[in-house]
Every structure is written in C-alpha cells, then in structure tokens.
Image 1 (cartoon, protein in one colour):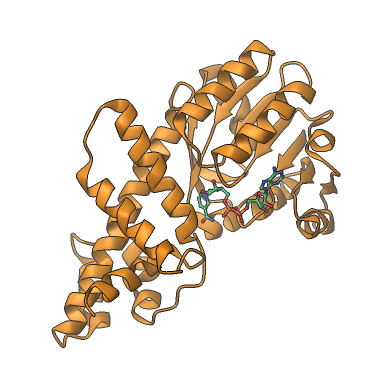
Image 2 (spheres, rainbow, N blue to C red):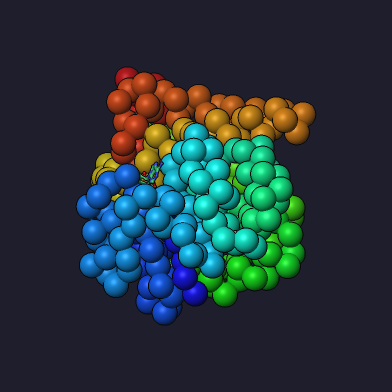
Length: 286
Ligand code: NAD
C-alpha cells in the first residue's frame, strides 16, 4: 500500500520504519527536515509537505503532538486525499477533536479513525503497541492489516472519539501509578528501607505492574531520560480532565495527578520522562 505518514518524532519515526519493513511504500513528512531524511535513509520516501505526503496515498497516518497540530494537518489530509482515503490519526488528542475530524472527513468522503497507542517508544520500535481504535467497524477492519504492522493488540473500542477516551483512561492510570510508585520510593527511603529490595517485592505481588517491572530501577537511580515526556503526559491529563467534565463525572485522583504533572513542568522537568514525577514528590518532602 501507499502510506502517507505525517509526524516522524519519537513514536512516528519507528512506526513509519516498521511500515517500510512490512513492505509498504511510506512517504513521510515532518517539520524537522532531518527526520524526513532519516525515513528516506530507512527505505521510505521523503515528502516536502503534508500535501506531498498525502497525494496518491491509500492510507494516511498522523502521529502529532497534540490537538492543535491535528486540527492544522487533518484539513489538508481531507482536502488533498484521494476519494475513500483511510485516514488514521494515532496522536493522543481530545476525543472531541477526533469526533470533529471524523465528521469533516465523512462529509468529504474520507474514512477517518482515531487510533491512539500505548506502549511507548519501545513498543513503537518493536511493533508491539497496544492500539485503541474509534470509528466505523468496516473502516477499522480495512485498517487492521496496516495497524497489525505497528502493534500486537488492536482493539475496536467504539465509534469516532472512543479510541481517545480509552487513551485518556490509560493515561490517568499510568499517571496515577507513577505518582504512587514515587510516594512508595519516598516512604521507603525516608524509613531507611532499601527501595530496590522493597520495590522488587512489590513488583512480584498484587501491587505489581508493567511500570514497576520496567521503571523501578531507573526511578531509584533517578534516571529520567525520556521516554514519554512530562510535557506530553501533562497534555494527556488535561485531556482526561476535559473528558471527565464533558462526561459529567468527578475524577478526584485524576485531578490530583494533573496538578502534580503541572508542578513537574513548573519545576522545569517538562522534557524529562514522566517517571520524574518522583522529583515533585521528593520536593514536597524537603
Ligand atoms: P514528538 O514530539 O517526538 O513527535 C511529534 C512530531 O510531529 C515531531 O517530530 C514534530 O516535528 C512533528 N510535527 C509537529 N507539528 C507538525 C506539523 N504541523 N506537520 C508535520 N509534522 C509536525 O512526539 P511523540 O513522542 O512521537 O508523540 C506523538 C504522539 O504520540 C503524541 O500525541 C503523544 O502523546 C503520543 N504518544 C507518545 C508516546 C511516547 O512514549 N513518546 C507513547 C504513546 C503515545
């Protein structure tokens, strides 16, 4: 298939590379020229603009930072895409924005899906992402072969926007776990207990999680290279808070985690990994 790919960052670059490996012709565009060149070096094609990437594509994928970037790029995809184009936005954005993109796409004869991902840079590189898809069943089935090259779990979770709502739920759980693991580390250290031994036991019991499996040692060593940046998780907590408001529900712990992410940014940690929430909890304790 001819695939247009817009947004070749931490996630988009390895995802586009996996599509090349799967035998697709991938034409990629990013604001950063060096990222476009990197894709060309991996066997893809470099595009000079969004329009250039979209022209002639059977499928267009966007992997952009946030809602404003999707609001800027999606109209170009819809306008310059071929009739019946399959447009899959895999960025994490507001559910309402995804619904609006889908409405406008449908009016122009373009099939749109929201398909945000979980699994991080490692999952993007290994092609093992968890992909939550919102949209019409027949469009999800049409996209499945392409999405299968990017992830091992592809679940159709509902109509347009539902993928983003599931992703918001994912991010509030991930943020909450990081917050509590941070508190556990501060408690263990302040009590004179070896945090590595303590967290090793936690990881093997009911408190176990992938976050403890993957991050407990780097957190104890205070290694916070991203990974997934605090800036992006702060954005995602804003999406979760807005989604809760729209759904008319109260999520008090989500609100607290959103505030801790805001504090992490205010303390200058926006470009660190989200596990750097530990720095905020530490600072609260002198
Ligand atoms: P990133 O900042 O590394 O990449 C985004 C890319 O989009 C950048 O290369 C940027 O130059 C490009 N871009 C921005 N505006 C553009 C435009 N108008 N036209 C073309 N290119 C444009 O971010 P990322 O970490 O790859 O994350 C992308 C999305 O995936 C975000 O929504 C993020 O929340 C989500 N996500 C990230 C991770 C992760 O671990 N990094 C995990 C799951 C989901």
